[in-house]
Length: 503
Image (tube, rainbow, N blue to C red):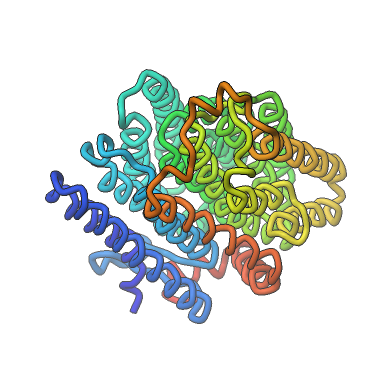
């Protein structure tokens, strides 16, 4: 039964290989990509149910015995990430049908997309640090090709910044893995968790914790290692930047949650205080950067940074409510942020620009798009009863319970400034009347083919509905994330499932 654990990796891998053999057949690639994304989402839903009902599960590939060999492991945090990856992969597949140009399709957009999803899912499913590094590299190579696909000067500049900083992160990661292996003699994360308390020099363990915090912090775009993100995420087409915005930094966030609840828990007063401090700076720097921008996707890119601050704040608090709030925030944010990038892409299709000063009048042209923008925008700002309100409320309440009042104050201020940015986009893009000389030069949505409109609008509507469901019926999601937090705060549950074959 546990063979299902490899399917989130196998399905995108096989579909990517098949599409490579159909390199010249773009229609076939589109169909296969959509089918693969649908299958991946179905597997993610089943896997979530399976882990929820059966507990933490592991699979050693090749019949190796623990703690050796390649291992796939799934707990509730893992399946949360796999589920949201499946949702975003499916939505991106639909959105790409209406937005991706033939040039990029001709040069392998769909195979690269599936290989990137394989790397994302592999990073979530792996149970050892070295294979996490391997999956990171699969993800990095495919995502770099996607950023650069098209070859424009702006894209290449963004791709270089993106890959250089992420290669630095990967280099630090592999060095850290080597040093940690020298300390404990293992790579399996559950095995490492057992061995770390036995290390004689615990100061060195704390040093390694900071080493991994820097490495994963670069990938997660936390302060002060975030500057590569707003320099690159706004350069590719909207479909690519949307899945990047939703998923890629969350791989780093996931890695932080994994190692700082399982491995590096020997010096919590120090390590997690550092995380809280960095979370506050990440929130502030991201939201202030967004407030200074006047380009749709650059505003959204800076808000990725600020919202990541909330996630790692929950981790830093290291309480049941803090961890649960952080996991809830991850799920909510991926849905909302991807959707906002989707909206920015359709606005660009309508008006031919992402610059706010060149936009306007979209609400008059197409009111439903304005409504679909408001759902994720207000959710990102934390307006009740949308999903963002419950996510922010959980993290803020956890800060109060931990008496981290500075963190509470920063989180509330950042929420207000986030709402300010969303209102700015609403006013500039949707509400104001566009200048006549600009309106005459730009394309109108009603001139686009109806099928293309449907392909672009349907994933936006789907993600908006999910946001509304989470907001209006939060109890099942709260209970699920509370259970995930219970597992994360009790490392023995994970260790027993991996090393002893059960909980």
